[in-house]
Structure formats: structure tokens, C-alpha cells
Length: 420
Image (cartoon, rainbow, N blue to C red; front, side, top):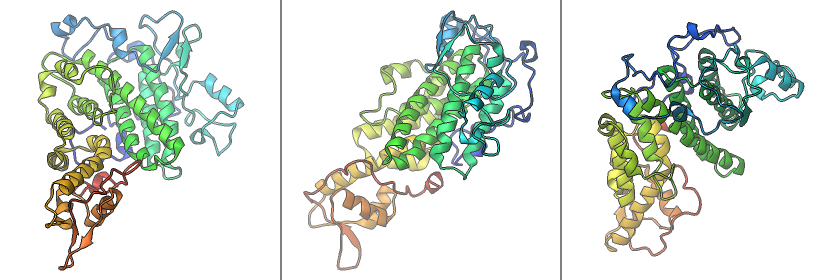
């Protein structure tokens, strides 16, 4: 589906599918002649999202079209293509690769026909990611055209609805096959609204995975998956921004561009979070006025500013009022850091003879009173019950400390639908 900006509705995995994409059965062949897909175009054509011819501003950028869309995951050896490659593979996986992997018993659990480790089919097998590709060996029949790639992506995202396997198992499969989709798109140098929509869906997958995998960070394997997912999130966002730049007109921007660019800003939360080596202030200078003034970007900038100066009240208030689901998936790990900062400020700045009521503090920090008591204990603070039977936090305690490792995940009151 098309992404709805700043919605409070949590997108279920099944809602990744787009109503505008092809609805052919996955095993059915596609006609992939370039003349049958007139909307697909190379970067040199650069039309805006509404179909009007490109303005002079696009020419003045003097951006190299091949560099714009070159995905960092794709390492091509040999002579480079001139943009004339058009894939003709009609299936999610080239037949030659599928047969070879059947012989090697190299089939993921989702690709096995009747659970047979050595048998798959055209509607189950999905092309694997290959880090290095030699142009001498690439045939159009090994590359999937845009309609096939759209259907393959929708199929992969539909697997996220499955309850038959743990999320990390599904993630591992989708993660690899999604990189292969980006690889095929890059080799064909296509840029249009359909490709932008695909990249937006892939970014959504990585953002949601960033949130879901974090709940199992105690497992070193899943912790590694979380790290790799963050790497691919950054790379996919970079490619998406290049597509936005190549496809924009001087007076408009893509429908969802503001929210996806705001995700990049939110990735700078935390002292160790540096998605790129470029200064964020310089990056802001490259954005259009429309994106900079959008509510999504204004939210991200306010959150980042509040986090950096330690304004915990403002951070929590605007998160509760304005955050979208995708933004929340990135912001969530820092919420408990802000809550711990609030506890430190109240503990060290409070009046010793006047303990802070836990009920009032839980409202301020937007969490359940029982969760707040747990967080206090994790930070080395003791709570007690006063003569009225109300729980309070005595201040001026010298035992405050930040918890070792990850914070326990606590409910954010008002945003429970994001955490289900």
C-alpha cells in the first residue's frame, strides 16, 4: 500500500503490499520487453512524480545518474553497463539458480516444496543475494524486470504475517532476498515512482526489524542481526534519498519523502549514532524548503534537540503527541534513557524532606506506576510507601546509577498500539 504519513495506525506486515502493483500469480511468467513498460526509465530522463517534464533545476544539479542509484551492496566486476540491461527473468528466482540450489540442498525453509530440502518451485524459490557479480556472466535471463521485482517484494513482505516461524527466522530470509531485489534494480538503473515505493517498503521493513530485533539483544546471534539490519537500513535510506533527488521537480516532493528523511535525522540520536560522516547541519542545507518545514521533519529536529540538551519533559510530550509508528521504532530505544535522565534530575535536584509521589512521576514519564518502580530500582533508587499508603521516591539518594546493558522495555502510555 502507499504509505500514509504520520498515521497513528500501526502497519501490519500484510499492509506492505501495494494495491497498485501487479497481482499476477507468483509462478506466472512476465513479458518484460522495454516497450511493454514505457513508465520505466533511466535516470537521464528524470521526470517529476506528477509526470511533468524535468525543470532546469534538475539539470543544474549535474548529478551522475549511475552514481545516484548505485547501491552500496552491489559490487560489479568487469565492464560496467551503459544502462541498457533489461531483465527478462519471469520468476522470483532464475531457473538456473533454482536448479543449482536444489542440487546443493541450498534452500531456505520458505523455499522447500513439501518440506523437501532438495526440491523447490518457481513460486517458492527467491533469488539469493550475491555480493560480487561479474558482468561477463550476467545474462538478462538472470535479472528480474520491475514487475517481477514488485511481486517478489510483496511476497517477501507477506511472510512477515507468518506465525509458523520466529521473527528472526523470517527476518533472516527476507533480509537476504531483499538485498537481491535492490541488486537487480541497481543493475537496470530504473528510477520512477514504482521503484521509490519499493524502496520505501524496504526501509519500513528495516525500521520495523530494528524495533523487533531489539527485544532479543541478549542473544548474540540476534544482536549481530540487529547490527547488520542497521547497516542495511542506512544504505537503503541513502539509495532512497538518491531516488528522491533524481525524481523530484523544483516545486514538489514525493508524498512520503518528509517522513523518510525524518528517519535519517532520528538515527542521529545518541552519541554513538552516526549514519554517515557528513554533518547533519550540512545535510539540512541540501533539503527543499517543503521538506524542512514539514511536520515530520520539524518533529525529528525537535526530538533531536530535546535529547541533546536533556529536556526530558519536552522530549516525552512531543513524542506522545506527534510520533508516527516508523519514527517510534527508532525513537523507542532512547525513551528509557530520557526517563533515567529525568530520575537523575529529580533525585539530585529534589528537596530531601519532600519525596516525589510515584503517581505524579509516572504521569510525567508516561509509564505505569509499577513500571516506574521497576525503573527506579534498575537505576539504584529505592521507593517507599508513605503514611497515606502512596508510593513515593525519596530524593537525594546517592545510589543512582545507569543500568548495565539494555534497559527493560516499558510501556509508553498513549502509544500502546505501537508496542503490540
